[in-house]
Image (cartoon, rainbow, N blue to C red; front, side):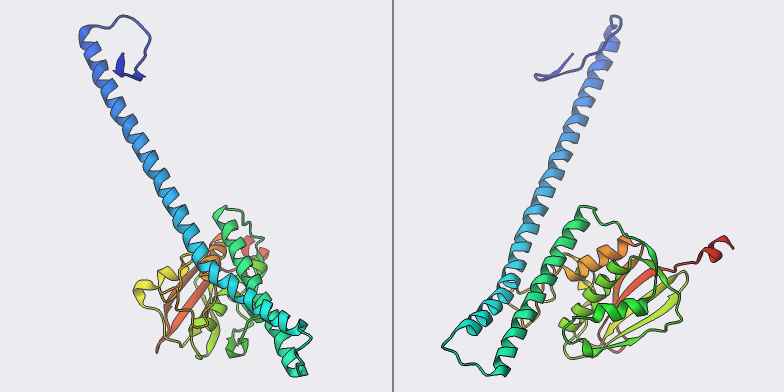
Length: 285
């Protein structure tokens, strides 16, 4: 039975009565409508994916453009100054230039790490190696190498139960969250506290900075989103807006949650919540 010029409904069996044939025509028409709806939905989904991919590429190019050029320019200028035989630099200036090269290289490394981690999360290629680990030991390692880490105070009781996590991924989570707080909290101090709540242990990264409006709080974890919509508003705030997105992705693959809330008295608190790591004896009891 011809439904459209390029679409036929084919069946097998005995000859149909007129009433049955009319019923089949109705069924054919309904099948055509369902097929058209299915094709339209598939086309709409494909269009949405392409639009998202285009938006992501544009956001990536826009965000990465400055943050790649800035440290590269610093490295180039510092290296050129050190190599220039006509410049008689005192030892203190030479040390400052070499420190600039090292710091800029660290910024590039962090940028590339976050880009690669974001890609791995999008592809579902992150498989955590879960084992008991303490927030106190992870926090100490996470602060190593962070600029201005002296502003961070650790207030984590060593007697708290361990969490079930991948130590390497959890270290990246804490480092990314603390680094974000150091960038956006101004000169306000930052404190890391932990507590047990039900079957989870919560690590709070608390700052007393300007905070984030409630309507924008969830956007903190959106890739390429940065506080301050104006791309020219850098003001020393480097990064492509992937740190917290990667941190949430890593936390979720470990079975935890990463959320943001107000700091009492002003500021922002980011909460890492992971399951308590029960010992084998506790499990069997």
